[in-house]
Length: 363
Image 1: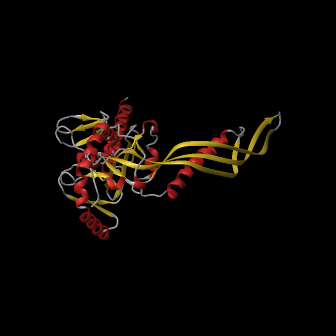
Image 2: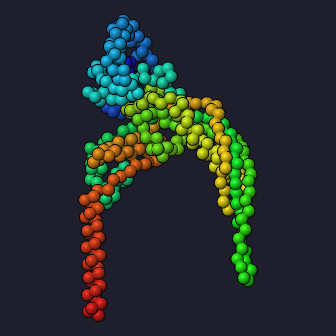
């Protein structure tokens, strides 16, 4: 059975969740607020108190773990520490909610060893803010009514997405061909002269904190689109920040994420090198040699608000940066509304045409 933890109010025992607006943990029942040091001290005391009991039934837990793994290698079973319910989730989920008592649960075993993040950026944007932004986004004449419905809007979920941040040194050189066109004329003719030049540019460029999402569940393009994040606001990782939100752990290895990082970094390096080249009418790269040397890689969790919804057999994704509020998404067009809109436009145009015609005839 996978270990899990949740955070309870030190005054009344109610659920504690991270409150982005207060930048603190708030009790949903007595409105008490707490800081990280208070929660960590309480959690440490709780762990020490329960350690004897954990050792006593460790053999039983080991047997249960073995049975669960044999049943499904990609699923994890955990027991809610509040109501005792046994819940099954996939192996990449690090924080979730109990399906029975709705308590926020942090699965500590998913955050250990290589899967322990170094840093995270806490949520800043509240769900209320995100819902208003979403409602404003979908408020378009031809948007299907489905996207306005409250039960669909309520699916907006705060998720900590796993990212790798790369610090690299980029090195590159380019063989470039440039052309310069000169035009002149006399009293009888117009002349055009094209000079072609070949030259080489080279240089180095250091990058810091190139982000690459490391979850196979997320859309790479969407995650790129909600950047940038302010990495100066990162804090040391603590499971307490996950309370009240979903969280994933990475399931894409360094080899795959490194390739995506190199593609992004080399593109920026190439553009920077070309800016140092002389100004010509046209410029083309004949040969390029670009590479990145990784100095450091950090595993972090970054805040996002996500809504995945399905409409007429097609998936639609809406995502917001949980720190800055940058928002991306795509919407379908309601064909019935489009038809009515077209008919209305045609009818309005016909009436205007008829009135103008009558006025001309009358005149």
